[in-house]
Image (cartoon, rainbow, N blue to C red; front, side):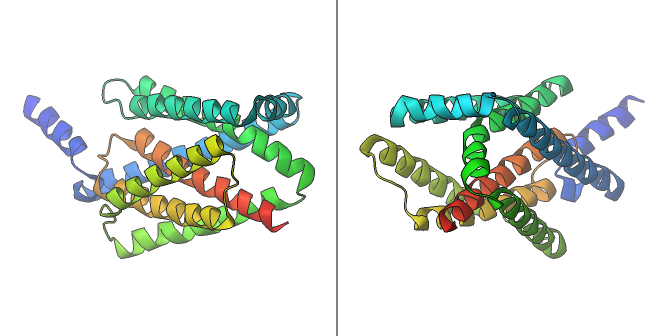
Amino acid sequence: MNDWNLNLAEEALVPAAQAPAQARAIFIRKTYVHLLFAVLAFVGLETLVQMTPAAQMMTQTILGAGRFGYLIFILMFVGVSWVANSWARSAVSLSRQYMGLSLYVLAEVVVFAPLLFIANVYYEGVIQDAAIFTMILFAGLTAVVFLTGKDFSFLGGILGIGMIAAVGFIVMSIIFGFNLPMLFTCLMIVLACGYILYETSNVLHVYNTKQHVAASLALFAAVALLFWYLLQLFMRRD
């Protein structure tokens, strides 16, 4: 009995690509079901926020605080995201993993509230356009990974450097008060697509079959990043 339990534990620690077919299929299904529920929770909570004065209040607060207020807002989001991600990757407690995913979804609801409020009031139809293009790109990039089986883990370092450079550029724009160009938005969309390829590849080649919550959080973060910059792109178009 002890040997059987040990074998099960060892199987759970190997990447999904090396796990038995049934365990791999269950892990992938759980990951994308959790991703779906995270997206639905985000949409539902964000809709409720937009239907109340909270969205307008948050928008006015951030705009009224000036560019340094926005910088503090971004730094707080980064801190919350780090905590949520560490919780979601916890191997000790499943409830802690779900707390991490829930915390991250709530953080994204707060971060998106001002942008969606502005888009909804001043840019008719852009939210729907951005959501449709996000789903199309996500589905296409996911299909590339699953149909080819290619390991995109080599993108990790490139994406990390790209994100550090992007955050640095955003901070400089806030400090020195210049607007980010359209090219930056387009490059961030490319970066987000790279993250979707990378995280989808990790679902197969890096995460073990017990890390479906962490995998769904990583995918949700990549989808949210893509939606954020597609929304900005369509707002600039209009």
